[in-house]
Length: 448
Image 1 (cartoon, one colour):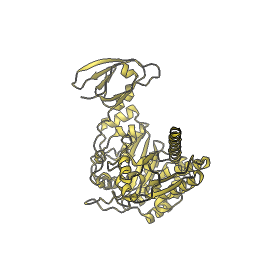
Image 2 (cartoon, rainbow, N blue to C red):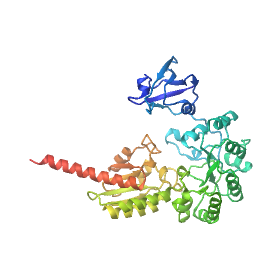
Image 3 (cartoon, rainbow, N blue to C red):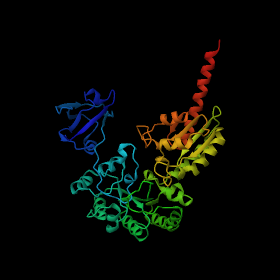
């Protein structure tokens, strides 16, 4: 049965007044059938509508929805079952995962709908002609597309699949349909760099402004690559040589297009120890989720936070955990924040034992790695961890551990924050103030 399964109904909403129930399936709006969330977003309005719904036994009924002007409908839906990826990419991160992680991490999705709805990258290798026409007809824009190489032979080798649709033909048709696209290249030394990358950049730049941006991101390799193709890691020497060659080209191209079209991942600068470009060179940060522009943005916000920071209501000792790649600029900020607030803050760069020490990003740190690194250390009153380490909405690490598990193992409170300079500053201040309030309340109660 098609349609969308209702996950929840907001209290006092139009959907609740209409008598809709979680678990029911929304089949149609004003007689037009729903295939997925895209159809729903296309057909739904904030006006009166007749909904066709079915209960869990398949019994159908009609519901009249009457929202007030500007009122949210109050419906949320279970996530769609994504189309599976049929590629066998030589650099696929899913193939490099150890056992025992959260089950959804092992799912390889390749779904243009998720690209539109959530900004996930797709290769378009499984895109049917009818789906391409639907994208253009419904103006599903922007899309996020993994190109990796425009050379057809190189791309087939990278994706581990033959007879795939020519990516340039697909992008050209989407561009003609006025679909905006953000693209990426996972940089694999010796495979899609050098002349191949030059061709890829040139081909994609020729499709600007439909292709809005291109990010070059170094390949991520874990220690779990048994029986997988041999790949060369992007080390500090390679990253330095790459930036020396490509930073001038990036700036020349972006100047010609009058937009920050080509963007290089933060990890390249961190590996090379190279200064970052000014934040203004990243535009409106279209490749943020790809790890592009995060460090310059962090440094920019950090300066603003330090400028307005004030002493905490009381002295506070705490430990902040982070990944090794972020340790340098995070430590600089924390030292300045400690000086202004009076807090004593220690930064611990956590070695990644789960994936291997070559994986240094903060978001891939596990709960067990934190426990291993911090056991026996002087931690102060609490351990602070960036929220990027936790699954959004579920609050668990990659290895299914929770902050409560880590807290119990370390014998110390563990508090997550949103991972920004202002998030850390606010969390410290609230924690210190809460302790002051609790102490004052206890003192008042003890008075005779």
